[in-house]
Image (cartoon, rainbow, N blue to C red; front, top):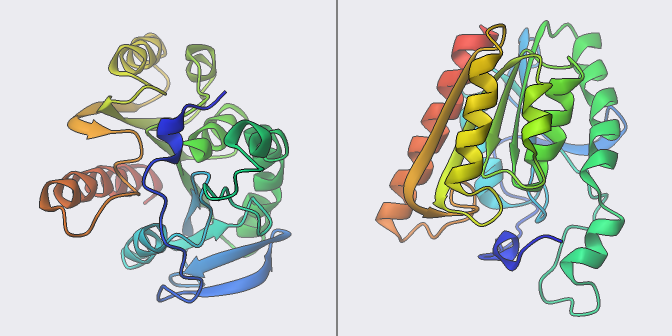
Length: 240
């Protein structure tokens, strides 16, 4: 069962936001896309339970795109993101029909569509729920680079099976992936000399800090911007 921390600070959804565009089908899923269509390097962003319309997530997509990547943010929830106000569909109930394993299966055609359009290097970043999708892709050799941000549902056994360069960005006050677990992730990666890795725990922040925060909170913005810089640096090192 996911903890309530996963559902803290839900974003106000603004479907029209972002510099990119929403397409009805990319690899079979509705998606927000941004960046140069002819880029040979692409990044897939996998949302947390609040879905692909979250304004900060789209802002992140736009910033990644401005660095030359073609960016895809698929709607893995098919128009049904988690809504905290919906008391009849609590998070454990919602998760039964929105499993990360289903997201992984639906992500594979998205990556295939990227390759069909000429992309030769694919990276993916996942937030919370999305981190489990990304680690499954990394285990299946579907990616050249992966980034997990405050992951949920990810296990040490998952990390042991990763086949591409991976960065894990954790939070000091995270009950889903506490620093002790993130340290175990790092130890597992250190044993695998064939996989490049970067692991970091951000002090003073909680689960969701990199994609759900108040723009009026200077400290929160600074931490989120640092996480973004680390993520982009990882892609720049491993996709270009």
